[in-house]
Amino acid sequence: MLFGINVGYKKAWFECDGTVQLGVDVSKVRIDGPDTNNVVTITVPNAQVIGQPQADESTFSDIHSDTGLLTPITTVDQSIALEEAQKEMKESAEANSTLMNGARERAKTLLSQYVTKIGDLQGVKYEVQFRDAE
Image 1 (cartoon, helix red, strand yellow):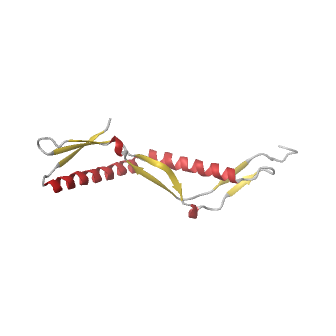
Image 2: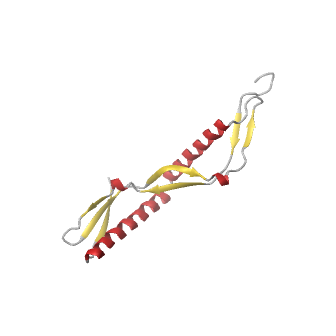
Image 3: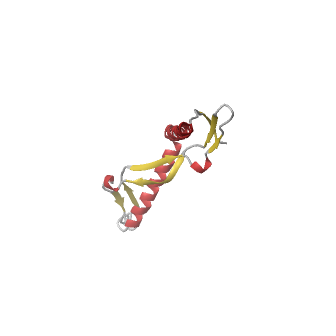
């Protein structure tokens, strides 16, 4: 405060849409078998956020700001706000068990289809079972 005027604060708000990629780390998938009954066991880890969330620049709202007399919102502030928004998007996706379970189930479907196709090419019918990674 300088002469009763607040000169050193800043607040800003903007909104945007973003994309978060979810998936399973394939290097942690383990495929065992087939056993004598043609059962292939696939161990699948939990899904995770892959890479950084991507903000859609075309959806950025105007920046609504409230600043002190001597503290404008700078491009550095905007960059920091975008990084914080990406961090929050990632944390939100990681905490959403429905999204994470859906991503894991899609990975299991793809893995099952892969094993089944390999069996079809060899003239063998494989049964696929899944196990959770520890």
